[in-house]
Length: 284
Length: 164
Image (cartoon, rainbow over the protein chains, first blue to last red):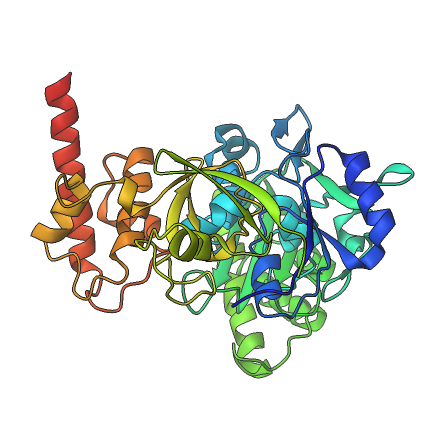
């Protein structure tokens, strides 16, 4: 498999990247680990006349855990995410999810930034970021701006990022309470048939707050505010979980594909969310 | 055709310099340009792991890396791990424990396993299966691959203890 020819650039800083993006418009693409983009280029489903490799750009790596929040540089790999003891303490759901992404070789290369910026509905990090109510930092010709994760995704591969902007970091408040990332896939390395990210805060015997987001069940990740609301104030018993699942099913919009028909996906989404809520509650 | 790039790579300790189109995939550079044919082309779609090499200390599927990305990198293939005259403990263990049948996946398996044991010298069976999940074998059913890696880990740990 030989991809179409391209010009290759390895700029050293963000202004250099943006200058290339401005010069070449949507003929240029930035590449982090390349494990989404290169397969698409090999299949000639992505046409990239100008490829901008981000590996030498300074300041895009690293995990910063502060008193109230976490910031992860876009070039941080899934393997680095998994290995971070600080992050495992501050936001353990990220490690649980990252371990379910692809396989070891891919996790050494695949980055958090690539996973969230690509806009593939099958990627796991976008739903997680919506569960956290994260914000994405974008760098463009006019400097930095931030966009909430819950407003970033417009359609498959369509996001709020402009052609001349680069996603440089994700930031989120330190998540509280119990957590679970539950993912159903056909085999290791596959994208989700359905996946659920759940964070739940318990106060006494009842649920004080809950945040729920679903992956690969629509052309964007789905933050289901109604599903979370269905749990608040309850003891997260069977009735409450069934209400949350019903609310979630109202918010997703799966399509028939090689992972199954719509009825099956709705069924799996319900099973996966039920398991995720039960596990998150047991840890709350 | 795009402009050729001047590429420098260190492969198994030897510096290589050549001109290549940036779109050349690293697996083709290794096999066809440098005649290093240990890493195999299996699926060529980032699934099977037959093309696994170690690049700057990471296990990488070399069918999913452009040679331009690897410019300046340090690459180790199965040829740099051990040879017929001096087998690596993993190669010895795969031979002893029937960790291969047809052998097609073996260079990628062993290259990946060197990194797995470097990161986790005492893996459980589950950790081996999870850590080797990026490498597919259609012959063995994996059972003997797991046994081989366990045996190699024991040999390597014993050698390390003896040296201390």
